[in-house]
Figure 1 (cartoon, rainbow, N blue to C red):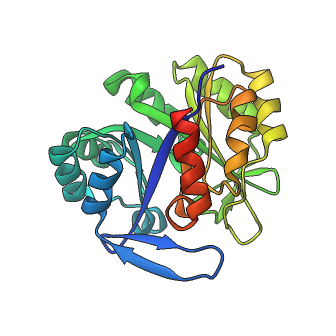
Figure 2 (figure 1 turned 90 degrees about the vertical axis):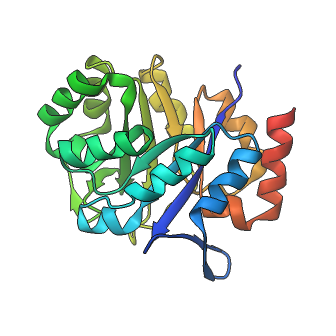
Length: 240
């Protein structure tokens, strides 16, 4: 069984990296470039950058930041947050993005994504699925789709995309710890895709359980930066 591919996440607010301690609710800001350099030095080969402001407004704006990180690190950049058209996607690739994670656009306009695949190739995109009460949600969790995740996976896998993410949310839109059994069921139906679990991992001991499902990887969010036991558990898992 292959080890999980672990990808840290940087959330952006007003151009700064925002990190929240889920245990006490404390939030603090730090320089996203410095943080990206630290993650690069730790040996991560990919980084997910989410423009939270862009996600809310439907307009990704952190192009200069992408360029700066791409210039001084070897890490491949995945970006998410407010991509709605060819122009912003083209700018992101020009700024140094390796892949773009699409959520709302994948539900709203599959035809545009088909055109994007023709232009940039299927490996340039990851389809993100966010689930709240077993339903797909988009537009920063404000809208709900009637499309089941099986339809989304089948559609985009048929277009050549093989990498998908699955983030579960509570009623308030807060990230829930990935469900091993649920992910295992999805993988059993679609064994050929590369499925990544979303943020919210609660226990470092779970790495092996997720690996045994056949999951390809996991995204490491706020808990990765604020939970010392989880951080140390991640290092042990990577070094085993």
